[in-house]
Image 1 (cartoon, helix red, strand yellow):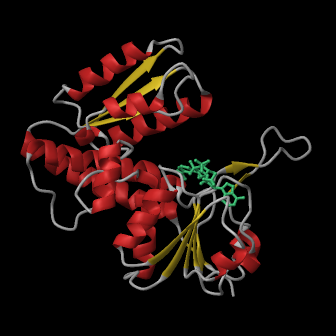
Image 2: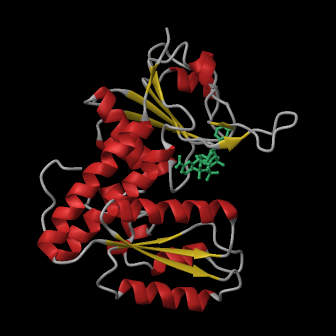
Length: 298
Ligand code: NDP
């Protein structure tokens, strides 16, 4: 069997186009553009790249982008003051503080300071609680993107066995909640799970969100399973190369021989994260203005 490749890049592109159309319609109704504020503290190169691409994508989707770049030695109190200012700024619908933050700043304190109604990353405990009890809120972008890819491919997930490997607050746990909401039967596995390959072999849907290069092997998979690989790992550079290859948490080549469908790395889940961030920002803008989202648009 050779798995169908789930093209997250193409899906994300079409989602971004739809966001752009709905954002233009929002502007016409609200008399202003939706706005996303991104806060970056310090000069971590990977974070700089993420912030730059988020800014570009926001503008391309007919929304305003407010970038706040603060020096690495910014005091926590000053960062909290900026968050408070953004909470009170009516032109800002979504606030994203790029993680990781420098070690002298407490991430949880900063996330807790963001208004839950502008927390488009869905990291605030209020939004985690809303997801847990099934209330409307904001869901972290990466797992929401995974659910979009899954329902696009499989339609109804009712009764399917899903195994999520990894229980972080930003990927694994919300992923499990979303799958339960979709009526899948969910196992949430982690580093203490016994007989992990055996557990994964039961799954119709496998979500790998671990951060270990190519950990999930072909013989861990039920033939025909749908595999969503969230992992982003850089292998050591091959001789003479400047950078190592990017790989996921699934051994892609061999897994493709067994799975029914699989996301590649790169080009699978990764591009969905920014597209869903834009989607969440646009949803926030509609809620902030009391304007209904067009039916079934996103
Ligand atoms: P974390 O490090 O926060 O969590 C990793 C999870 O994997 C933990 O729950 C841990 O278990 C579990 N784990 C670690 N080792 C094993 C093992 N040997 N067997 C089973 N489970 C194990 O990572 P994140 O959730 O933040 O990210 C996971 C991956 O997804 C990373 O590669 C990251 O780069 C990527 N990522 C990709 C995004 C995208 O946009 N595509 C966005 C976010 C993350 P325990 O809790 O027991 O320690």
